[in-house]
Every structure is written in C-alpha cells, then in structure tokens.
Image (cartoon, rainbow, N blue to C red; front, side, top):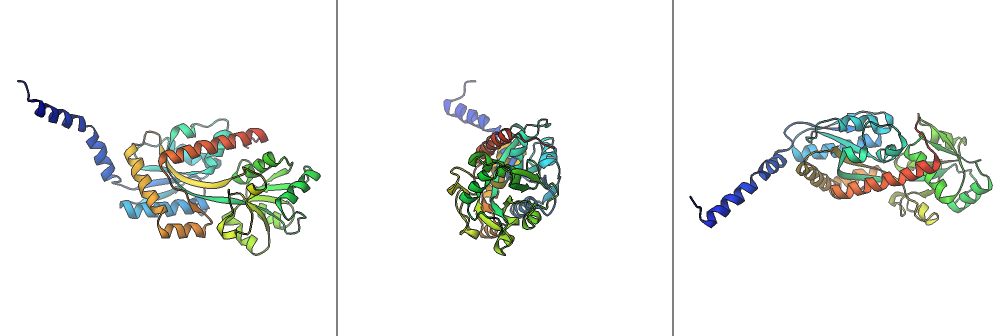
Length: 324
C-alpha cells in the first residue's frame, strides 16, 4: 500500500528521532546513584578542599551524593589511572589538576595518555603562585633579583615541594625566560618555606593560598605574583610579567571523565558546575582560598589543558627535568 506523502514524512521523522530519545532520557535522569570524584592528592590539600566544594554543590543540585575519593601518589597519576580504567558512564569523575599537564611529559612511561584518555568536563578554579624571598635577601624587586642572580650564577638556592611539582617548574620557567641560573633544592616532604624563613634557601615560587599569611606577617617578602595581572588580595605586589613579559603560571583544577562518557552527561555536569562557579557562596569560598572561578565549556577546558601541557613540555625539556 502506498502511503500519502504527509503520513510517510511523519513516520520517517518519528523513526529518525528514536535513537535520540534514550540519550535525552539518560541525561534527564542522571545520576541515579552516588558518583565518586577521584582526587589524586591527599585529604586536606587545596585540591581536596576544592573537590569537596564542587562535590557538595553537585550533590545539592542533582540529588545524589558526589563522594570524594582520595588516591594520592605519583604526582596525581595513581588517581588518574584509576579513572581512565573506570566505566565511561558518568559515575566516576576525576578532579583534574595542573599536575596532570606537567606529568604528561615528566613521566616517560605512563599506562595512559592523559589528553587522549580523559574527557574534559569543566574547569573550576585557578590560583597564582607568588615569588617569595627572605626579608633579609638583598634584592627587593624582580629586576634587582635578576641582576643579583646574574652576578652570582648558581649561588641562589630555589626551594620547591619536589621535582616536577608546580613550585619547581614555575621556577624553571622563570629561569628559562629571564636567563638566570639558580640551584634547585627539592623538599618532597615540604619544608621549603620553613627553610626560606630560616635562610637556607633564597627563593620559592609558592602557591599563594599557603603563603599569603607569611607574606602579610612580614616573615617573607613577596617580589611578584605569577598571574598575568596583579592579584586582589595582595594588589600592592606586582605581576611577574611586568618584568618578564609573557610569564604566567598558576595552579588550577577542573573535572574530567573517562574517554567515551556520553556527551549529554558531560554537558549536564558542565552546566551545573558553571552554575556553581557563578554562585556568590562559591565565589566567596574561592576567595578565602586565594582562588578564582575558572568557567567555560568542555571544549574551552580541553583547549586550556592542551596549551598547559605543551607549555610545561617545553620547560621540562629545556631544564632536563626527570621524575624520580
């Protein structure tokens, strides 16, 4: 029997729409059970605190617990691999950190390819580092520091929280862009700021959240922040880029998922996270942590991660950094 053209078109349109319906329904009902957010760092760290804030917001918005699971070790690689090997169903997420962009080049043999195997969901926050010295150090500005370092090559000891950490590569980026030579002193168990106060090292590129109190009390002198412009909570401290054009580094976080996670779930999570980042309460909590919201689409976050990975690859190769 030959169908009238109108009936045929209606049936064809209905058939074409059928495959989309399960996807739409899946996004509408997700999540139906608890979701875990894997954090590749220890409980109580800034990474952990940020993940907790995001998890609490998503729990309130989506009606299911978003549980933080700490998997510290390997510069975040242990937690990342656990997520890579999880089902791509939206029920296991990764708190991405700036360490992931560094680790992609720092480690020669990883059981995953971060850019390929983790799908970006949303950026959440960023916070600058601050270049700090002991108040007795003779240089009081970045130009004076550079001049002193060039007059005393290799004599300045630069402390960090370990080989390949953000505090280390931030200093190596400064060395690369300013042409100075400093001796790296890693402190894998912490203690670099204590030794800076004690005068055993001369400079540290330290995350602002953990350093601002010592700067405000005069125990340390801040020469510059590493953001592209001056930072609100210490706006009297210049940006390092005012003296070394193009210099920028920060710690940052976001949320990712295993490759193959349905796009509609990623988009739903992105929308809810961005709503949280725009809320006054979240902004206030981030300000307490010397952080700022870092919103955007999944594509925006993916582009940012790729750019950061490329940047740190150049620094790691320039400095010849090898993971321990």
